[in-house]
Length: 380
Image (tube, rainbow, N blue to C red):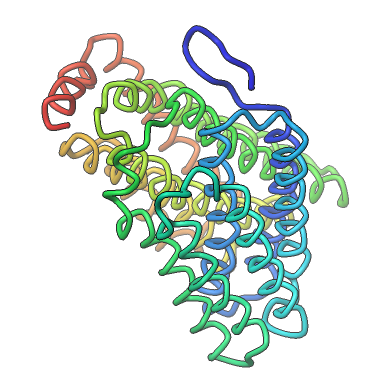
């Protein structure tokens, strides 16, 4: 554990564990790009949830302990290996690799429950045991099922995992978390997803002739990713850390802002990756309906997630972010009529305008973070 005056920092085993998710997010993004079939959007969600929830469970566990010891380091390595197995299964997850996906997740939940057992010795019913007896077996059974039954079992398993913080809210409310560590961990996950987008963009561009249009596409895609980074790390992360540090019942902030709120943020980035890859492939052509939805819808989902977080934490509507999300969706109907580069530049303009507006608001004190924080403390 690396401690600072502000709180605990992420440990080296956690950074190594995160490397698996570079590959995992790449696999989910490629799953979205392999077909135009709309059901694959739902399949990508069903696959992403257990991958994401395994990362969340591991990070919550590491938040409560000093994991820089042999037992915890080897345990986190084992969880990372299970996550790697899940990622390897993604390309054929509807076929023969479904069993690998289900088995890997079940083993991940067992390993995590064994690691967390000492922390919950007096509470046999907790999110870790729920995953071992409910969602893990459902994922495992789904891996050996076929057709719609597999997806249905996995969807139920994902719903069970996501409901765990609500089911055990009383147990979790008694636990104190290091908010510095958690905010850093989730921010690092966002960085990983954004980094995957740059790897995918650069890799696709390097495989093809570097025409002027393609170079413009790469530059604009890089700028859009940077604009999404700005929306998170320049404005949003400050307010999030304020609320986390001021909450008395920490789980009531961690659950909506981190565990739930970051799932659509990561999902939005992965969707954007699929759209940007298509733009770089054919910058002067027109986007497929599937690619246009991934690009515009991914940006909209990413921005709207912040609106959800703001409402759940502060009971205030983030009109500027929701308005920008709506503007991104308004690009969708005309995306099929314009060159891919033009669509990309429009989205870049929307996100850049949002960042400029918020920057001016912060300077003027117009976002009201301090007042909102006070109200949140009173409610807690």
